[in-house]
Length: 370
Image (cartoon, rainbow, N blue to C red; front, side):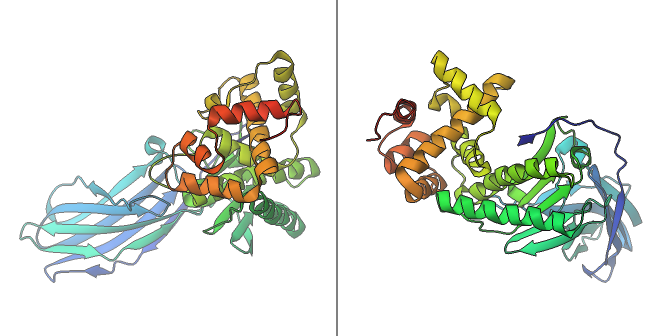
């Protein structure tokens, strides 16, 4: 995740309503009369249903599936509380303030089953809710597998960001062999406040985020030179996370943090001054964080976190520069197959994380790679 400090303001959520045709597979004695869903983005989705028949309705269930990358398709089932009657009108509210939200551009498929006291049962044909942030009038452009959405700034602004996106993909493929396997949607908010208004309880420093299971990236970038320069780096960073997630997706193991964040940092381009200063200070004091420690989530302390990102960039650059694109792709492939951290490194490079730690630090002193 990219961090960027900005002021926050009160966000008023818009209400988008989607009416879904009440098409059902039905018993003639029981029917679903109406079905609809409304989105109060990003806080909740409201599912509505009305049904009637010859006998008292005793059971109503909502079933839904979120469209995202996962190892097994999960269908959620909700038992609806209501008073049994021959005619029932009720609803269920998915309160995302309790469960976590969905990003713009995501989809939810849902259907109902209704049963009465005579054991008649009807089921609606699945319908799809497309989740969007209706607070803004979005425009979009598409190139290859990337669709970029924006609402503030002219066409040249969007075109410049799209060009940066394509360059980032080319750079990543050149360094690692990794390419997009599925389409990605990139939402450009006009500032970080607008971005945070699309999220549930975001951190105040959030400036960009990759919703990797959904193929969605959202970043706050104003159409001015300073923000665009920052935004191009942010896009490269978050896009790398998304591509690498697609390439290494498996049910067994995650990537070590140093590899995931290091690849994203390499994709940004040359390290910025804060990171190079942190590296120089750590080298002078001989206080580098070990590669093994960098496999875990980074410290919450700013100074240690900056050093962790900087070291991860240097470690990954060391592997790419000295062993090449093919071996990096082989490493990603090993992780895709579920290999452990040391196992994957040993299989591809012939050393584990401790060996990598020694080699990259020795390279700072000009030692030859063996």
